[in-house]
Length: 66
Image (cartoon, rainbow, N blue to C red; front, side, top):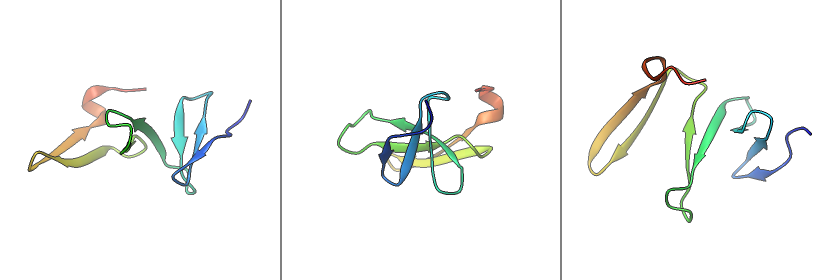
């Protein structure tokens, strides 16, 4: 099938159910607020964001995602 859809300079790969950017980083598209999707980078060890005035970091190794 291959990667096909393009959104926000990212390409969707249905086989992996992830989005990739030009350098190959992998993302999950969070559409909790559909008008402002947030791209969660799952290709690095950590992901960080700010929420309600707090800085939040997720360590993917602790969550053991695949």
